[in-house]
Length: 482
Length: 138
Image 1 (cartoon, each protein chain N blue to C red):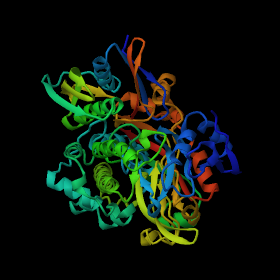
Image 2: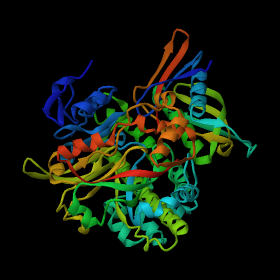
Image 3: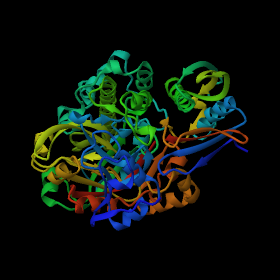
Image 4: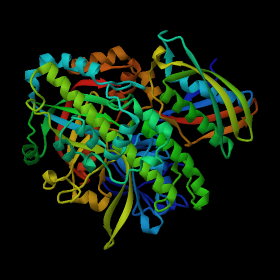
């Protein structure tokens, strides 16, 4: 049955609570008419309605404009539950790749001056940054160290010399979320995580060299020292096998909680438990470990990137101006405080393919960005654009401080593989001046621009809806895929 | 003809597996997740490793997903791709199997499957035996 959406305004659409008995709140979709057509293609809207069944869910089951069909939660979904009112946490609302996220590093280089070295850079990055399925990193850790990573996150990496305090200041949660419980992580998860520190992974994970091609908010660009033609780097990766293992084990465990806590959800992948239950506390402790592992991972990946730039271009990374702008998680559940209907309370905010977008003045935002709002990094596909945005007060009021996380998939991997020819695609990218190096040929086709929505449309919606603000836009010039 | 087919899912891969018996269904599904994600390409390491697996669940569907996830997890932890599966016991949601894997370095791996999910999961009897649908997170 096709869902009839109620139009709230040009960028907001409602799935009424009456759509399905059992929905506790309505669904709200952030999209314009153009994106809605794509959204109707798959079963994502049904999943928005299903998330509205979660006990304790507040305001709405929300979907960002990059929404697409996931498993349980839609990708691009946001759901906050009221902990005092029996609100739940669902491992499916975070996903297997816990703290999959992205960081943006600036340089003081102008594209025009390094154009001739670009190929060397891409190939050197491909060789120095372990990527691909099951890739093992050169950064090997002992069992004791792994435990330390799970508690200290990126702080561990910095203590090893893989970065600076400044990097931690520019990472969500300073690179280590509190409340990690290494005893809640299984032996198998440890085993899977051990060899993968400092690895990029495969699928949609990437490392990209990009050039700023459009400035929107000049004051913020000046503040961040960003200008047209400047080279930046984006790194997209997550918690690898360790995170998958944590999610898998706790999802299974929480299927049993549905009966125990008398919870009715229409999809077992939405299995959940009240935040205050021992099962949920144990999951949150393990999830935070995986999140910290991911922050350490991206810190290590940035370190390897800096070393490679030093090697290819000469000089030190400090001299090349390779400072971290920000690192954000886009698969995570967080306990956050909000004022709802005049009362300050704690909520469990699930962001499944969604980015935190706190506005100016929020104490959780690092001091240097408190004036402008938290940087939000939105990667697009390998042929079009990526964006830097900042969070807004409106996002805090409307979406539990959340916004989109990327372009959002349009075509399935199999459909992309069937309809896109690798040689044509590579020629097309080359004509745009984009160099691609990937572990597997299939990955390039599956991740082709045609497989994604246009990130420009997605960002237009979140900007126009006021849940984040455009700062500048980049285009890719060098792409390293797993 | 392959004993599985792929069905469309925007972000992930859906697999439909068919078999004459339940044991065969578990075996075919286990082999399918590696067939869909890897291709044997090199002979870098000829060693084969046998691993014994023992699992228990509360119902058939849970056992099916747990089985696939155990294979994915073992594959990632041990660096193996499994190419032979022998189901030795499958009674009352208890499963015992011996799986044989060879070094992942012998394979080209084009998709990292993160896990098998419960979303739209189905394990059912069919006129020809058994059929299962499972969506894998890629």
